[in-house]
Image (cartoon, rainbow, N blue to C red; front, side, top):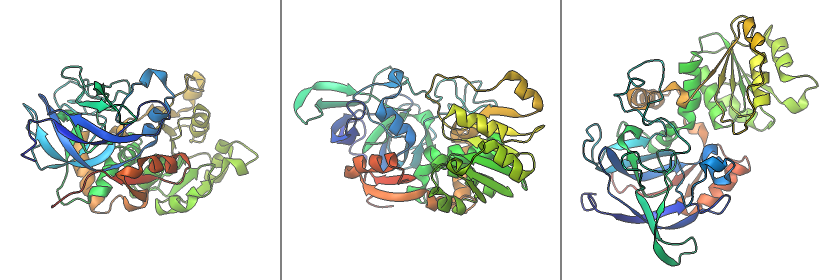
Length: 394
């Protein structure tokens, strides 16, 4: 890696040129990191529904093409820019879409993990330091030569590339002996779900929970609740095939809304004697959110919003419904402060407190990235791991 430091690197990346267009594996140029930036060699990356949402172009305000997607990954530091002290060449790291500078007033408070400067921003497509990109290409999507043009970044990370450049606030050092494929899951899905149970809801032993939506994040919520000793974990999903996987993460009951002749919240209240202690909405559907809210117990029930809501619709709640003692709260990245708290969480995962293996349902080479997207669209994958680069030695 010393041979490439300070130089432009030519490598392969999966570039998306427009909404719903197949990703193109092509050569790009990756600039050296500037002040307080880090250049990584990406080893493994997985695909999340947030990548799929951006690829679909459902939110016009987020559109920026050509672009390199991807935000769940693990890699090794190739080089660092001026001022970077907490990571160095050769360190194993995970990139995070939600950064932590450690200096702003938000980072210094326990109540929030949304750094003032490096918090998650789906509209952000360039680097903080100079408003420019570190990616460029001299070919179009058909491989024909063209004038050099910039390629936009995504969610502070852009991991569907052999090399990427991130703000150092979005790079978290991990144990060099950690299982690398599994560590990529901590960049988003597993941390988001487990953290929602641990840090936001603060699930207690012997309590009851309901998880609406059993995708990767919802199953991570269930796994987090299981690890905290929840006695009953009710999984709600219209896909009955997810129950078998849910059992591995501690789901004790399964409700398929399609099988009911009554609202889901009524069923949950009946089988729990008044409602669950905690509910988690992981689908990004406001109608499901209302069911999740009403499924909690009067007096103390708490609902955590975990899903992403692309709709312009507002909360389907009447203010007086909050007078029943129920509460509702949002969650970003599971409340984890990435640099301060994620390394310890990674250690807990390595010790088996949280099981990561069941989340990896598929593995494919980088060249098959479009097949991986299709698996996610078809609901046949929780997390598909792509090998982006080969690790020569460890």
